[in-house]
Length: 454
Image (cartoon, rainbow, N blue to C red; front, side):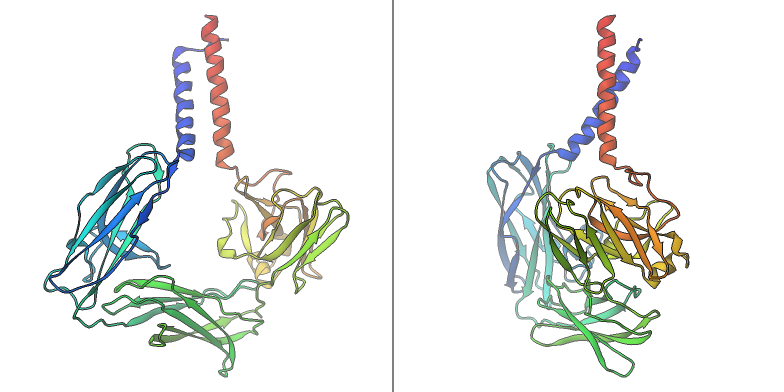
């Protein structure tokens, strides 16, 4: 057995690349801490103020180079503040050009801090209302091998002597698709059309039937100040019970903490199949010595555990799981409408449990009316893949039944086949990387051995 010099070095290069990949995944991180995480102040036109930001890292963190810059004040739909580069910072309320830093790059040794002073110089024609910017703090790109979380320091300036205007507009109300067993979600897109930020904004959603009879409501607060010109989304899930087929009215109103109504609008909610809400949560204490059955209060989901399924007492919970948070279905399959979670056990069961689910009209519609295509599947988080199980389908009581020793997230899947025994439907990238390391390491070992024999 021989190996060429070129082959030997090719293998070494390959293993080096894989090791670098693993190093990136496990590189040390530094947690940047900031004192002075927000500026809130009132400045007259032509006036000046300063704000000191002190940045540090822990004693166990690696040395870190940090850069600071003044950016525009952006906001994503969830309300989170995001820095904007100059090309995207086009707001008339931007204070980016009026703020300077006395230092834009600092070096931090473990356990140390450094302070940077921001100076705000408002022009004479500033305002009215408010002006905004973000001081963006992050590791210097490409320097050292440290990864650290970026930090945004929001700057809220009230232009003194001017009149702030608090106003807003509901741009859209989206009720999504009504799905049996999933919550009804109302998303209200709302824009701050005034010249000043406001806090404590909240969204009140009310559902009524065609006669105006109250059905359900929900109130969703916004945890962040809403900045002028930005659009955020309030997501509400009214506590709706069973709904018959029909058309309902959804009213959405955005108000401030003092009761001021910023805007109100409404839309319709079409229910095309009799709606059943998500199952409420249920739990049970499993013991090694006794069999037990955990079922949802409405009986749609149940898990039967045999004696000896666990080795010690454990509380197991059965509850709903949002369909929009499920991982993508594997190739050749698609998600049905039903999803739920069985939690409480960190590992696997000692003996298989039997899971039974009543499939819904929406599950059947996803399968094109062919119930034989419906399967139960669980998500193997260790493998990063769905496992589609052999499933008994009973079209008389509309049930799906399967056995497994795995808890976690479950779903109804539409598929003509199941996963091979013990195998997920999609390979996990981490085991593949580790396999490459092992293969490459073995190859280099063989190469070194061959070279020693020459």
